[in-house]
Length: 411
Image 1 (cartoon, one colour):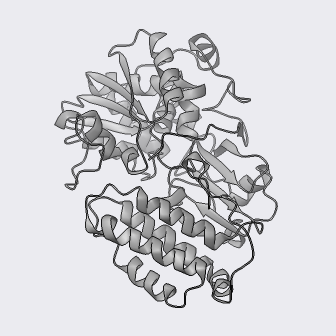
Image 2: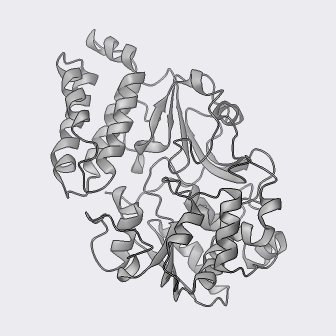
């Protein structure tokens, strides 16, 4: 595993920015600049937060898209012992949460501290895999006089270590892997105590919602899911980076704004997400209910070998296993071998890949095998013609690494 991370290539918006207000162009907002843009944070009760999150349809932005109001309602009556901001961003295609800590850390801290006061939390912890993001958050925390004080944990780790339960396990002193027993953090989170945990973007939205109230917050986005969201756009685009969009923006509008020429394939949601036919991009609105995962949209074009891209990422996914269960220890490496066989044109590789995909979902100690199986299955479905070309001797194109991996690894 490597800590090498891709910094945001740029930050921009479609429509008026909210989360990135004042930060377009890559400008970091210190506390004075932050207050001049957003004004001081506003205290709200737990009941108000719950009601307002329900009214605007706010969902977590870490990938699971769980309704925030439901998570608040699931806390015990006495509230949470801690609030944890997960900014680990283990997904290689996503840099949005690191961008928030890099550029607008105070907005993230506003949401976390205001919510902590509302639920009676004794601690606020920000955790990230990225050293620069951690330093930015520490500088921001030192500029404030919050109670409870904010602590920042730099915890290097890989893909699975960024999963919410793995983050809490690591903060509690254990290995940063998802526990086999699936207990909700609202019941037993940090050090086994009730915890409200979500990702950095979720807390930034809470910081805005507490100031704005539900009606102004709902002035953009959809009726059932209001506001904006962040996407990391990458691959074969002339304008890569983090873009803030109104919820409901079609993916083809995002791709046009990112100056993607003629995509031949799209990966939506990262490497636990899905391959999408670009022809479906026009009616496909970006919402938390769309499989955008950790806010990722990657375009591939005709210059790269998509079968090689898929095989390369599958090999990386197998190496990112937590090593806790058979589907990860044996299943994912076997699947990666089958994908390498498809790329090499082996006649038996297709049947072997299909059998191995079928054995993965629902059997792992965490969601890693399920997500990897979905990513590979949708890729194989999309790349039927490409696979046929490789069976005839190959497509003749290099593997350019348009699907990003840590450290820029490529074949």
